[in-house]
Structures are given as structure tokens and as C-alpha cells.
Length: 422
Image 1 (tube, rainbow, N blue to C red):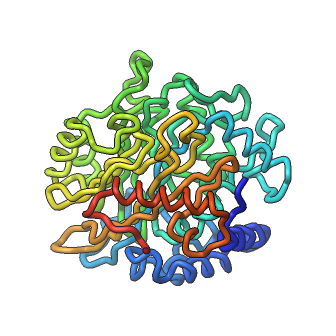
Image 2 (tube, rainbow, N blue to C red; image 1 turned 60 degrees about the horizontal axis):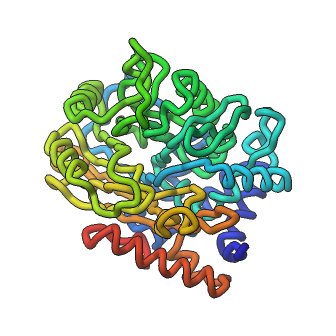
């Protein structure tokens, strides 16, 4: 396996040291490290701002208090990052088990009492931790069920991943995950409930699948005093049907339903609503006619402020439609896909970074940038491409692969969105 870049290894080692004690010193280091790198985050996420949001090490986005009035006019905005699909393929899970067996990180995230096995996904995500943790709100996409016991694990085509994935995502800085996908019902209603049990235990909020009708409503978060709504839907469930009498188990894309939910969220106090859509055609970089049609309809409504997409396993473009942004597909954040099975660009992804500001009596996306990522095999480490190329410490093959990934991602994202650096 090609070596991890020296700069990423240094950051990751610091993460390990700090997590054995207080995480606050690393948070300050991480934000300083990113000054000048994440332009959309500057001015909206300073070291001081992060400290106020995470005084006890908890997620920076907190559950919204329904008794709290909406944020006053003129309140500051916030920064948001979101990323692509997390797919626990069998070979990736086995690599996490190998990391866990080494015992390098320790803690429940690697060695929790789940089936008596240690799975550690944190080495795979360590290099992106500074980027994710610097945002005021960070959202991942869990595409598959997760087993609360760590038993009966399975990969493609009917996934059931280990619970330590959720712990690793939270440790990386994610606050919440969208969950509606074509694999949502791989393990039936029991799998839905088990997945949400895992996410709750890891401290991750969620939207897209539910245990009851109330949970199927918009997930309301409070970010820097601002109420933000998350909604998540999928195009379908690989031919599986939601249980009879339980249509709320998993959200399916229906533009009228999405708009009704977004309007309800606005009435409930949301000042900014982001919709996550699992849609499109696998391995196709261009959005389909249905994606374009749905995006136009949703973004024409004042209840929807931003659309972020998943499912294609390759990066798709980000564009403005009706004056608002849609990132049609963020590729894969973490998966075992590669040219060995699929197109080479299944190793590519983007961390979309937006700056939300108050303008003309509403909150809008002021800027959208992206951080290209690439999954290094066989260790399945997610590398920020531009930063890795800039800091060196790479063998020739890895450098060439990263450069090719960057070219693909820039081409796929299109001319309207710009990389966060480089």
C-alpha cells in the first residue's frame, strides 16, 4: 500500500493523542490548519466559534428546542459541509477489522462491545478530520443499514455494516447523516430501527428513515442559534416495499411530498432547509432529465434552500438553478469501488462546503466550494486530493492517481463551482 502522506499522518497522530484526553487543543489546531484553505468557512467558523459550539466535545449542531423562537433578524450565518456515499463493502470492513486489531486508537469507536470484534474506521477518515470538524454543521450520508450488535454483517447486495462506522464518522466531526437510499430497506423494518439505534448511540442526528411517523418529519437542528432543517429522500429501495401500514419507514422522492415537508419545516421555524436526494443513474456524471426536472421544481419553491445529491457513486456537477445551488452528486466518500469493478472515478468524491449568510430577510448560500477526495486502496484512506498533492510525501503511482482524480473531479463538477483550494 502506498504510504499515507506525511502531512496527513501528522494530523492523524495528533488526533489520536488529543482524543486520549481533551479534544479542544486539536480543534484549535485544525481550524488554524485550514485558514486560507476553506474559503467558504472563513468568517463563519473561527476557532472561537468552534469553541463556543463544542464546549463539551459534543456535536456542534444541537437538537432544536421547539419552544425557542426563531433566530432574530440579522443573526450570523453558518458553514456547512456534506460528503458522498459511505458504503461498507466487505473488503473495506475487513480492512477496518485489521486496523482495529492493531489497537492503535482504542476507545469505543474501535472496540465497542459489538459482536466481540474490533473494527476501526477512523484511520480511513483521519486525513479529512480537520476539514469536517471545522464546519458549523457537517453531514454525512449513510447509504446502508448498520447492525447494532455487530453481528450478521453483510456487503453487497444486501448490506448490513458494523456500528463502528457511525462512531468513526462522529469522531471525524460529522454531526448528522442523511439516510434515505436504495439500500435503506436491505434489512427490512428491523434494519431501519437498528440503524437509527446505532446513529443515536454515536451522537449523530439523522433524516430519511424512521421508527415512527413523528421521526419521518424534517430533522430540526440548531446551528449557531439558527434553526436548520434536514430532509432526505431516495428514488426507490431496489424493489423492496416499505412495510404495510408504515409508509414513513423510508422517504421516497415525490416532489409534492418534499415541498410539503419543506413548507412544514418552515412553519415549524426552519430558517434554512437542505434537501438530500438519493437519485440519478449509477456511474453517470451528467444529471439525468429527472434530476434536472426535480431540481428545478424544488428550487423554485421558497421552502427549499439547497439540494445535495448522492447515489451515482461518481461526482456530478454543482449548478445554480433558480438562484439556488444543487450539487447533483458528491460521489463516494468511503467505499471499496475502483477500476477493478467499476469506473475509476468511483474512487473520487467531493466534500461540498457552503457558506450560508443572511441576505434580504432570508438565509441563502453565499458561496459553494468543494474539496476533492480520493479513496486510496487497499488501505481505504480518504485523502483530500489538492492538499495531498501539495504536501508531497507520495510515491509516483499515488501522485499520478491523485492528479488524474483531480482532473476528473474538476471536469465533473463543472465551471460554476470552484475547489476550496488550488
